[in-house]
Image 1 (cartoon, helix red, strand yellow):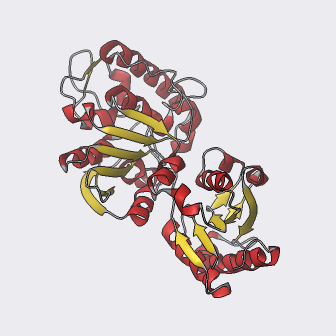
Image 2 (spheres, helix red, strand yellow; image 1 turned 120 degrees about the horizontal axis):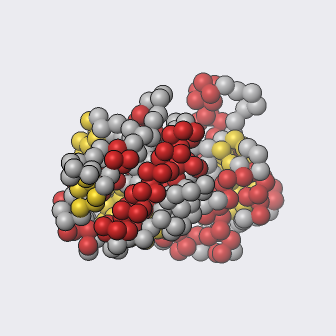
Length: 382
């Protein structure tokens, strides 16, 4: 009996990684009913990270009332794994771009809600946090996150400043005396797939600010503000984070994480999940690994989930293919990173509404084609 491991990311906007696994399993079993299919839904730190961990490992979903990026009440979820002491939190749940609506503005956005999720996890006895940074709407350097955990951000009159990208312009002093003492012993593993520094032409504001709605003028102001924040983190907290690779992630949130969590480590997001589920052992005796994502392009080789999965498959000597929603410019680069073939589900010229209507059927069709071609190639005895 052949063994196939399914390890796709979500198809953003259409299908979760769990749904993709279920549909691909259906397609494979229709073509080869005796196949042993192992489903490992994955995520690289963005939206869907919590669901992927809970689906793979089990655990409890916790829903909390927090503040969204614009400081409005919102219900957000995180996960607690079966050990009872490890929490999985994604920035997208409380501070994500979809929460701000059609007119994003990082000058008014805060990561306070993400800090509230972490605080709730600490209150429930968690001593280890897995934090996914993808999909944020913010550019506050993690000031909101820090404020939610007891850090006081003060202006020149010792009055609190708004912990937003714009509010930090008035910051004069950082008082960490009220910082939650549990952070000193809590292990924080951060899913971070970029190496951008906090400030400068490759920093959080310049590279990611426009994606979050910042105008060129706002980008320049936000960069100056984060530069000032870096100076104050060094002066008041002895935290040198300005030029560290990855501190520009999630609008600079990674900078505050490194400054205030003594046991903080930045790791590639897909590596974090694959290690947690014991992926290497799962694929050791597999005949085929199938990965995928909504759109595969030249950026897919820069820390995205499918290539991370493929690299593990190659290491185990197992062939890997991908089923994707669409392909974009430069997608062929994945063929040099362990993915042997790419099967696309989308129909040429289809509108987004049509794709939404037919995405499940299209994915099953692509899965059937993939299974039939794999049999034809003689790669397994499916």
